[in-house]
Image (cartoon, rainbow, N blue to C red; front, top):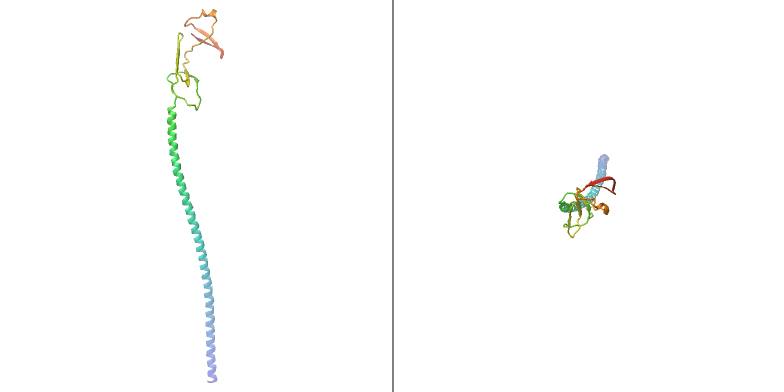
Length: 194
């Protein structure tokens, strides 16, 4: 080999080395880019895994919340049914109470004014106690059963007065005679009658 040939061969080898060095540099840059890409993809996978774990936890929490809500709805339905039953019972009780109230009305068979009440609120009473009184200027009758009357009703149209009269004045009194009197309860009022 000659010197020229060796120089040419060196120049070609030098160019090949430069070309190979450029290729190595290019390959190293590509490796660095690929490594960066792998790192980014690894981070993306890790983020996705973290999101999946978070999503799984979130899904589990949501499932638990749904189960609790369904349980609450079921309890509310039971309470609703119980409340409907209570309303039905209350309506029935109200109807019975209204019927009982209608059956406890006191109706007098005579007209007059209540002059006495022989009972109190809440007391249990039974029917049957009757007293009838009538009076005229010439006779008086009365009848009574064994039970006392709950209410005493009197006609205020006429009264029978029992009074003490001195013997000296007794001969002056006649049947159907007009009378004027005053009562201790009404000292300034004169009442007349016969």
